[in-house]
Amino acid sequence: MAVTMPRRLPAAKRSDSGLKGAIASEWTKFWSVRGTWWTLAVGTALLLGGVVLAAISTRSQHENGTAEPFTSSAPFVGSTAVAFMAQWAVAVLGVMVITSEYSTGTIRATLQWVPNRGRMLLAKILLLVPVLFVVGLVSGAAAVGLSELGLGAYGEPYTDADVCTTVFGIALYLPLLGVFALGLGTFLRSAAAAISVVFVILLILPILLPALGLDLIAAYLPGDAGANLMRASTGEPYSQAVGGLIMLGWALASVYAGYLALRRKDA
Amino acid sequence: MITLRGLTKRYGAKTAVDDISLEIAPGRVTGFLGPNGAGKSTTMRMILGLDKPTSGQALVNGKPYTTSPHPVREVGAILEARSVHPGRSARNHLLAMARTHSIPARRVDEVLQAVGLSDAANRRAASFSLGMGQRLGIAGALLGDPPVLILDEPVNGLDPDGVRWIRALVRTLAGEGRTVFLSSHLMSEMELTADHLVVIGKGRLLADLPMAELIARSSRHVVRAQSPQVRGLDVLSSRLTAEGAEVQWTGDGEILIEGVSVSRVGDFAHEMGLRLHELTSVSASLEEAYIELTSGSVEFGASSGRSQAHGSGGEQVAPWR
Image 1 (cartoon, chains in turn blue, orange):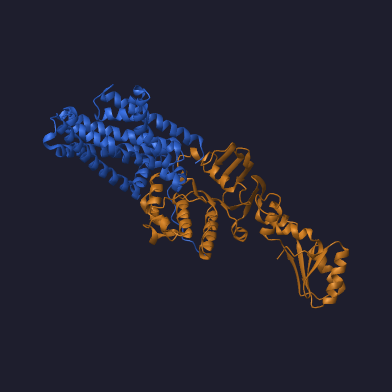
Image 2 (cartoon, rainbow over the protein chains, first blue to last red; image 1 turned 45 degrees about the vertical axis):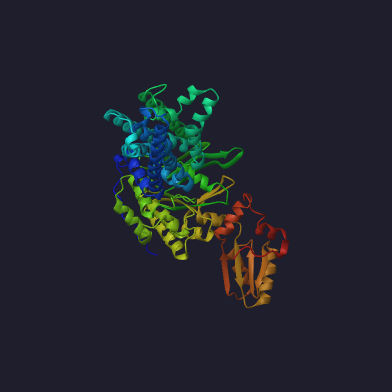
C-alpha cells in the first residue's frame, strides 16, 4: 500500500519556537472556539444591562433627594455597571482560557506543543492582557457614554480627566481580573470550582467580612481594590493607584499558585 | 532515539511503572505490548513530559522532552485520550500547533491531505468519527516532520483500510530512519507492523527483543504431520511418544507433535517408509508468545484459557493454530 507522505520540512531553527509562537498559538485557540464569542456577547449584554440599572437607580436616588454629586456622574455610573455586571464575563473568560483545556483534554496537546509550563502560562497571560485591555477601553468608553445617555438631566457634571481615569482604570482592571481568574483556573483546573472561588472572593467575602467586623480585610480584596481602580468607589481607604497595585498583587499571587500547580501536578 | 533510565511512577502505594530501563532505536518499529493497566500509557506520557516520573528519566534524543528547544519538531505523538477541543475545527487545531513552531500554514493543509482529512478540515472536531479523530491525531504527529514518533493505539477505531494505511505509514516512517514507538493491543496487527518488541506487565519490563526472537523463545514449538496412511501415522506417534514427545491427533491423518524437532519426525517417517503429505514446523504466533510471557502479570484478567487447558491434562485443546 502506497502512502502519501507530506514533504520533509527544513531543519528547525532555534528562533522557530519560543514565547512568540506560544502566544500566536494561544491567539489562534482563543478565537477559534465559540465560547470566546459567546462570553464577549454576554459581557456586552451585561454591560448594557448594568448601565440601565445603574442609571435607573441614580435617577430614583435623585427623586428621593439622596444622590451625591460624585455618584451621579456618568463616569461613576459607568464604572459601577462594569464592576457589578460586565466584570463577570471577564472572570469567566479568564477561567475558561485554561479550564476548557482541562475539560476537553486540549491541555495534553498544548503541553506537547509548549512543554515549558511557565512559558505556556505566560503565553496565556500575554494573550489575555492585551485583549482585555482593549475590551476594557472599549467597554469603559461605552459605559461612560451610555451612562451619560441613561442619566440625562440627572447626570452631574464631570471633567475630561474623570473620564480618562475611569476608562483607563477599567482598561487596567479587566486584564488584572482576567489574569487573577486564569491563575485560579490553572490552580483548580475546573471551571465550576474556579468561578465559584472568584465569586466568593469578589462578591461574598466583601459582604460577609464587614458583618464580622473585618472591614479592613474586605477593603483589600480584589473587589474593593478593583472598585477603587475603576473609580467605582469614593476612594476609601486608598487611592486609585494603590487599588491598581493591590489588584496586581492578587493577579500575581493567583498566577503563581497556578504555576506551582502546573509544575507539581501531572497534566 | 528514546532512552528510559530507571523510569518509575508511583501513585500512592501503587507502582504503575517500575524501574524500566531501555533504549528505543531509530530506523525500526518498536512495538509496545502489555495488558491493560500495565503502564504503557503512563510510560508514554512520561516520555512526553505530561506526567512526572517518581524517579528515573525519560530522554528523547538524549534530553528530557520538556527541555527540547523545538519539541514538535522532535517528537510527534498521539495519545489514547482525546486531546482536541470538540468545538475547534481540525484545521484550526493544527494551525494552533503549527504556530508554536513557526510552521507555515500550508504545511497544515499538506498533512491534512496526507491523512485524507482535507474535506473535513473546517468541520468541528466534535463531528468526527473515532477513525477521523485518529487521522487528525496522525496529522498532528506528522506536522513537525519529527524524527521520533510515539503512537498510543493508533489503529483504534480505524476501518480495515485505515489499519492497512497506518501499517504502511509506520513502516515508511521507520524506513526513513525515524524512531517509531507504537502500542497496540491487537497482536496480529503488531506482528505485521513491529520489528522489535518491548513488553511490560504490572509496570515491569518483561521483554525487550526482536519480534522473531520473542516468537522463537516461546516454548510452543510444534510439528504438524499429515499422512494418508493412518495406521502408519499411529505407529509413528507411538515412537514419538516413546521419545518423550507429546502427540495429539487433530484430524483424520493429521497429528501435532510437541517436543521433537521437525527433522527427527521426518527421519522416523523415512525409516518406517511412511508416506507424508505434510511435515511442517508450526511456530508460535506472537499472541501465544505474548500470553506465555505475561500470563503471570495480567492485572485484571481472570485465569486465562491457556492455563485452564494445561490443567485439564490429556484432553487439552491445541493452543496453537
